[in-house]
Image (cartoon, rainbow, N blue to C red; front, side, top):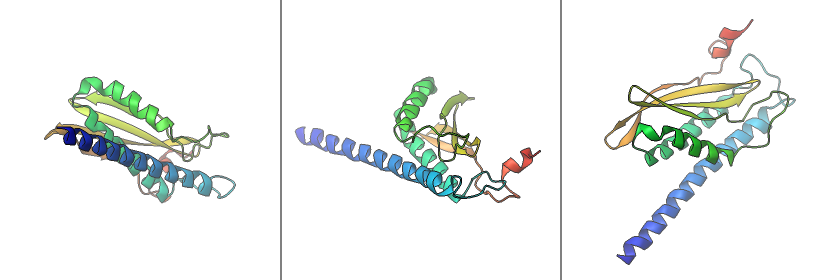
Length: 167
């Protein structure tokens, strides 16, 4: 019995280390966006600083959140899960940005419920605004499975959604 307890401690430590590694990787990607693509380093086109690294950051954030979903099996705890996720993400946020340049920052993760689904909305900063992604999860076979997603991954001027908002 004691051997099982020791194994459980090592397993939990390994799991926590994996979580920290995921958050560290996300932090590094966000820092790359901030240091490589912030003004005056580059001039921004219609993509407002969105680059392929933005997709990497969005997927790292989504994948990390998905590891956190395993801690709840019901929709009643969505608010507590959202609070815990946002508190953990604050540990990797850099200093507050100035001049409305949000590139490489994270906005609050919103978790809600609708029609028996868990809806997760994330937002990664670009210049002057956030690029949001949404994911829907259904509890199946003992875990939350992503069944729908809406995210922008093509930042070319003809494809990026921000072009539809040009004046």
